[in-house]
Image (cartoon, rainbow, N blue to C red):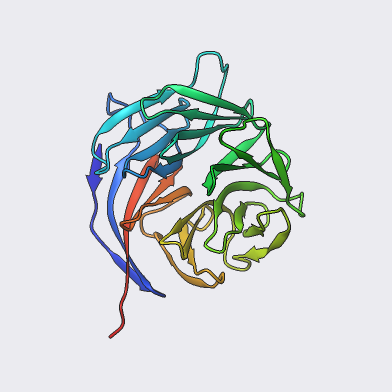
Length: 281
């Protein structure tokens, strides 16, 4: 079910952001809610939502109006717990935290690969050259591996092992950005594993999801403050938005046309925003 809300624009930095609609996370009976987890847009504009209550993936059409595919946890994975999702031309990738798996499904929902990554896997991201990145909240590691070689893992050790990583994204600089919910910042890790600093100190409290828009804007969910923080490539805070619509944002996804979707774990909804660049006269 999609419920439209009043549109409100917030300007700051180089973006104007308007609230468009709210997608209530309801089962087909329209009475039972499910907890939204990770979000992702596919290259064809389709939208994926993790149903964290039932360990399913719901795929909506590019207009976010119709359910076109639902993917369930494989029967041989007992008690699985889906957390995050990513999509590209090669398939749909899902992180499973209980048994520490990353699963790859094709566009029809058929399981194609099962990567044994390690207990506590949370957020995942897809990089260039067929690479997959996964963060472990259990042991504070960032793991990298190629799509076509499931056993070829490389651990990129985060220097601060007392961190609590939740999500990751490939930054505009090529570094990996990892949200640290314990220390309230985004850890920056170079491709070969050296830590390159942090962003968001003194601005973030409990950062969770992270996504990149237009290869230069970094969107970070702050579940404690109920907002999305927007940073530029240099790590400068440009603006915050969503306070009137968000309560406990956890994951965020951005589409090339400026559509921004945010999962709210307390409202059991996905809030949809529209971003566009502001041109000065």
